[in-house]
Amino acid sequence: MARTLTKAQPVKTVFMDELYSAVVTPSSVSQIDSDVWSEKPVDIQTFCLDWLGEGLFPVQDEFSRAMLGELATEFNTDYDEGHAFWGKGSGKDRTISKMQVYLIYKLMCLKNPHEFLRTEYGCSIGDDDAIDVANMSINARQAINVYFKKFKSLLKKCINPRTGKNWFAEKGVDMRDGYDLQTSEVKFPFSITAHSLNSETNTGEGLNLFFVTIDEFGSFPFEKAFELLDAVRDTVTSRFSGVGKTCVISYKYYHNDPMDVLYKKELDNERVFSSKKATHEVNLMVTREKLAQQYKRNYEKAKMTYECEGDAEVGGYVSKKYMLSYMFSPAYENPIVGDLLSIDSAFLQSLQFKSFFKGTEGRMYAVHVDLGTGKKDKKNDCAGFALTHIDSMFPKLDDRLKKDLYKEGIIVEFNADDPELNITRKGVVIDLAIQLVAKSGTEVQFSDVRKFILRLKNQFGFNIGIVTYDGWQSRDSIQIMNQEGIPTEAFSVDKSNESYDTWKELMYQQLVRCYPHPIAHRESKELTIGDNGKVDHPVESWDRFLLEGIEVGSKDVIDAIVGSTKNAYDRFSLDVGIFFG
Image 1 (tube, one colour):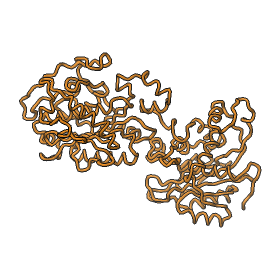
Image 2: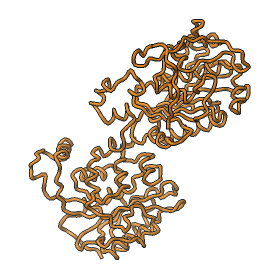
Image 3: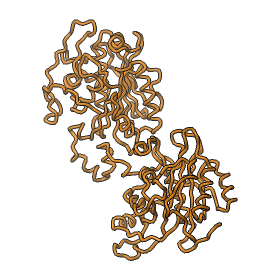
Image 4: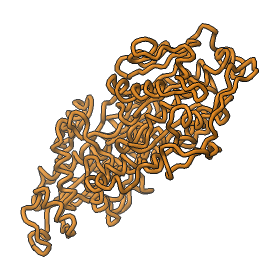
């Protein structure tokens, strides 16, 4: 968790006026007699105010000191990493630019920064090695146009209060564009270089990274984001362990985006300085009133963008998530003894059920099995299983839902008292939904699932009219089940969104019922639309980690429910039943 640090002493008001009266005594840059320092550095707030002409707001100042050191003549060793999870418009890029300019200034105040880092902090760096400071953006345009322009403009604004001249120019840096100031890097004395990198062409490999910022981490593709972060961490700690820093900054792009997951994962890590703030809490020039139009246009999106808040309750494939509470109804009971939701497939034959769990004569049941890829995956080798039937339902649609359905064209007319909207309808009941798991390093066995389906038919009397498999190498299972007298086919809910759209429309009309099932409920809330336009799950899910101890996202159980719902609704009627066997 972020801890409170001592703030700079207030002295004179700069551009913030009454919003942030930070007063700093006019700097007197003193030459000191030291074997270490050629020039006594000032603290970061003084540097920003007196040298750059732009101060830091309190939250920005706190984060900067946690990363760069409370005392001007020391470097912070309390943290390896800093997370600035701040709303859009909070000044993240500007703050990081100031921090990096200040860090380079501080290093250049040393007589020999290489020797200092070796002697004082045990860094494994030779006299001829580079000291690299870098900002990493998602693409070249963002790297050059958004971040590096700010960085170079601040370098040019850095005026020595004692002389009235550019401090870096005084130290031998050619401040003309195209000389020491290149398009994507700036060279300084002591082999110090500032780099503007992007994940498309240059990930910093081969650099001696001392201080790195990953900009807008939430916008990166998920797996690429964490691969990049791990690579940067390794580089920084291998050369500058304890004193080198990795900063990750972003606002919230969507629920379970890389920044959202990273912040939650590392919140209790003592080596990480975590700061999560709304835009108006960081940038005191911004108020909630100034953002009122954004909240009015799209409240959920504005809450994520400006407050870094919001969760799976907003956005995603299922927009009316309140309807899931009707589907997963406490009026229905989990039929498994012990109310189990997740089961090792090897124990399906010994699974115990409550006395009411049995098939009804003349009623037909549908089974769908989602077996995933069939590959060994120690993180997520799960399958989904669902058993459903058709039943008559009386939805009792509330007025809010009727209005929503009318807007979407699902019902033709809206009249709260219209008896046509409150008639008995054909609906789907989920009799059984299971997450099937396998022991680490093994797979869910197809034979276990086949035996379980036969057990449902022979022991519990379920008239199974159709079984469908969505998974790798299900051909043998289909052939064997057909030989047992149970119609079985291959069927995928992933080839198009048709099955999911059918399930969602029925669910919105309260025509799908299931007992409370936290795994399926969580999967339903987290459903997204992928880049290919198909229904998908998040790459990682913090909610799943809290519930199941697994970080990767999933939709195994809801896939099974959706598949069996589609089959039952399309194939079975309310008044016709055929008993097989």
